[in-house]
Image (cartoon, rainbow, N blue to C red; front, side, top):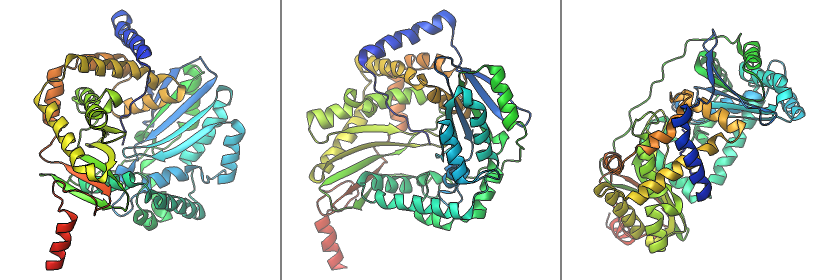
Length: 464
């Protein structure tokens, strides 16, 4: 699932870039990210020539993310992607690592909620052998049993360290209740139980079913011509066999009809708070108004209302913010903060106050202008490196945004009005039905909505 993050940019630089974006479309029209072609086997490939540095970045996006994890096998998609370089028909895991290292190439693979991504950055002079290595990893992995076992053990060890992170544990509980049986209920890396249940043959079958050219997007950015790129794509991916892609079947999302509170009991002095509910999909036409609304509420750092109220005015938290993570399915919207356990109820009350104010009153003109200026001005940072550009190209193709998306983005944000911000707040923020998860010492927490005070609980237990 893709997280909407804040790119920090000096205000003066942001203003200059905002002016550039504002003037660009009026003069020459939107400039596309790159060019799009499709091979006979169904592989969509995108290309952008960038001669500023002698590098080439390649991203292969496969529609094989955690959404495809079978129930009880959580982590299968991510595990499959991680194992791509752990042995092929031509190379062992050690040989693969040595050859990437010899080229000085950066290579990574993994899966998020909606898709798997394989990424390569290599010197332009080495793009041919670099692509040969990438193609070998993606098209001919052997998934040796010992490597499957080793990678599972590595992932299991990471879950042990998660136990020491209260906010990580709060997020796990939050997602599990919000999504129920849906794959978004679990982190892309899976669960300990799911990973232990995965067998090697299931990894092989997952790869065979979903790693197909008609289920993938290849983006290439860098110091080579379109003709050179076309030749390399055909050379290494032209013989990739297409296949029938099974239909994705997802369970319904569980309803949330009232305020619900869960406590993750940890003997710590702080309360780690997550407040939220379902958000929107990436294809939702209200995405841009939602993005502006989120910036004003809590996504804008020190420029946001939550930071001003909870940190600056009341001094209850060092940091507080709101986040939304839109995907193919409705992603979560949540507000997160850390405060002293005894201040948890007051912090939640202030969250509700700010959410209700956003729904009740139009935002001010200065707030709206500041949000637009930041969002427009920070966008170019998504294009300031070959790797970033390649990733963005694959992303906009996957979600159907169009390669002219960067040229349209400024106008889409600029067109958001105060009335639209209020409308999306009223439509998508739900102070009457939300999920509150608090990771902290149960005995120190004050009374929260839907939560019985600790002393009262002990009395009831004794009576029972």
